[in-house]
Amino acid sequence: MIDAKFQLMLSHEDQFSDDFFEWLPNNEHIYDAFSFETMKIIRKGYQHYSGRTILEVLRHHSALSEQGIWKLNNNHTPYLCRLFALMNPRFAEIFEYRTVKKPKLRLEK
Image (cartoon, rainbow, N blue to C red; front, side, top):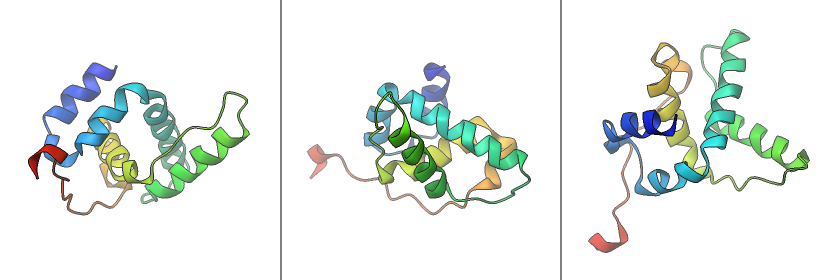
C-alpha cells in the first residue's frame, strides 16, 4: 500500500516536506493507526477534529503498548492529515489546513 500513498504524495509533492517523504516508508504503521483513529472519530459523527489530538492519542497508546513507544514527531501531523485527506477525499474536511511552506533542502542553502 505504500506505493499508492507515495504515488499520491508525488502527485501533490508541494504539500509534503522532504522529511515526511523520508519518514513514511519506515513508519507506515503510524499513518495506518492515524487513519484508523480518524475513521473512528468520523464514525462518531464528528465533522471537524484535531490531527494533533489524534497524534497524542497514538502517543498515549504506544506508551502503554508492550511493543514500545513510537517516536512521533509533531512536525509530521499536518502531513499525516494531508495524506489522510488525499487517501480519503470524502472526509477531507475533517481537518483544517494551512498553507504549507515547504522547507528547503539543506543542500539548497
